[in-house]
Amino acid sequence: MKTIRVIQYGLGPIGCNTALAALKKEGVKLVGAIDIAPDKVGKDLGEVLGLPERLGVTVSSDAPEVFRKAKAHVALHTTRSFFKDVYDQLELAARSGVSVVSSTEELLLPELRNPDLAKKLDRLAKKHGSTILGTGVNPGFVMDTLALVLSGVCTEVRCVKIVRRVDASTRRMPLQRKVGAGMKPEEFRRLVKEGKLGHIGLLESMYLVAKGLGWDLTRHRENIEPVLAEEPQQTRFFSVAVGEVAGIKHTCCGFCDDRQVIDLDLRMYVGAKDPLDSIEIEGVPPLTLTLPGGVAGDVATVATLVNGIPRVLESEPGLKTMLDLPIPRAFRAV
Image (cartoon, rainbow, N blue to C red):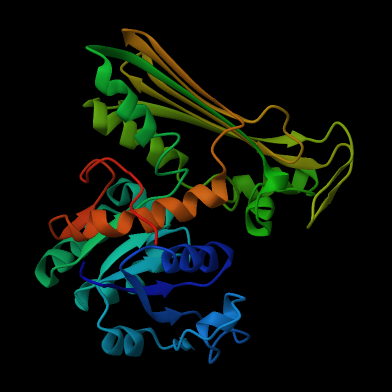
């Protein structure tokens, strides 16, 4: 088997766990690591990951130098959520001929909000032989791709309803912060109004489902509300008093003319009881899939990134979505 040379781009909680998972995969070798945090730059990657041994890879803040020297095949990209914010990072990878598997939420369907940038990156990727994919657990799997896979046994689909209920206390600190844990309700609503709070990628999930089913949505409705704590809650990172924000309820509905065809309901809050992921398809035959406990978000995000490595390498160059590549699946560990 040819050794796959991988750069880990971003060493936050998800990035570090992604690097650790990549180390366990047969035929994968980490050859570069990029981050801007002063407490990580200049250190051996093994030390940053908490391993007892050195890996011989020094964390660098000089991304162009890493791409120039590493001779990598793939970059596992875990930096920021918005396509515009990471465009230069993705362009660097594309111009270097390095494929990318990214957790950037808007990259699930980049043309939805940034069509011109998406076209530009697609052209560059094709020119330089790079394949770029945005994926993850949500968006990327449970509220979009999994529903589309399930629809494959239907002769007709009239409506898709997806519910995801997550106990945010089990997740990493940045996610608990993103859902507003511990905020006052008025602060939550102010940040929502300013576009600074909400689950990034839910709209992309809805339009990916629509695109996959061949539906042209004529309009959509989106709503973001706080879930208020009915009893005190304590996580490793936040204390939440009664009446404070425990998390978020974020919904999206998509319509074809006057008919609602997609309903996404995400509830992610500290203390959520009976977590689950549920997909209901109104069609022929009607189908309901429920995963009690739900998909473990942080672990699953790491898995989608690492398992995306062979899929991008086997695909044609360009900016791709989950619709363009073979079905997600695990590949062999050591």
